[in-house]
Length: 353
Image 1 (tube, rainbow, N blue to C red):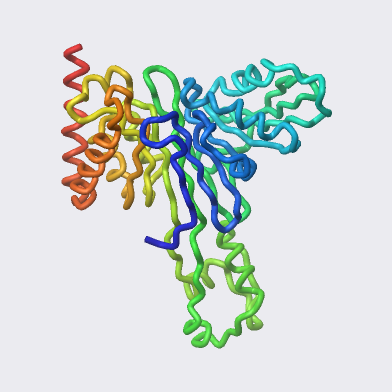
Image 2: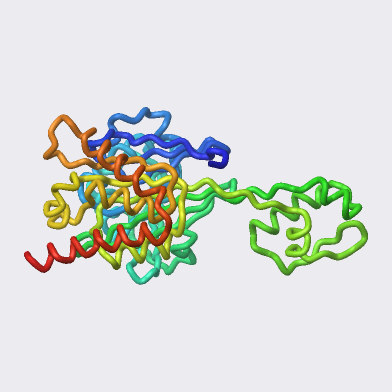
């Protein structure tokens, strides 16, 4: 695995409310996937978070909004939060539930991005100055590039179906590293200089057809990259929770997120409890492992285990890991066969209901 750029913490363990804290090491900045209870998080860690990505607004995924809000009230920070439609209305309802007569104008501000199933994204800036009035506008954000952090790290999203309600899966990816091949510099009689940083910046921006003057000659960015640059794989992780294991969701995940090195995925039910999983539109341990393997993951982190297993949620996590170890070594054809068998099993069960 390439250099680890992210540190992650599943805030409430295997069985508590979903919330994952991710630190981007290069920036010292953090983000949250989901807003389950945040009582276990330190005040200082919450103040490192400026961006929050919510899968959906079931209570166990959103009740931590109040803690996040309370911690940030004195600091007048702009927070950016994403979630599925009708997310703007729901954030406004949270904010309007309180009385704010003792604070300054612009003290509470949320940039809210609302993700629609068709890929459209709307946004609104909610501020206490005008009682969090909603003024919607169409966003330039795209599902394949929701936002970008200072070091080039970016977030993607896919809208999935969770028993009739949208639930968003996310992928966080560090930018690829562009390593300069010093031996090729010598072979081309070029000297290192500030132009190498310009080249790397242009590559990150995708400006392949632009020209750069180096050594008395105009080179295209694409040509310089071919001659001088080795692209090293990015570090990435996907956050997957609360959706049905079916063909449509699987197709959306594969096409929308692609491959990823790590997967944080619910394993709500043991494999033997597949009927419960289908009824609740959650995943079994085997389904969690299959999805991680299908996304090419090297590591699987599990959470969101059902309370029916009492004080022993680790039995589900252990079963998921055992399935994952058996699946990740399969060739693509074998893995597709395992996915197809599981899908057919789910479809048969649905037909029998």
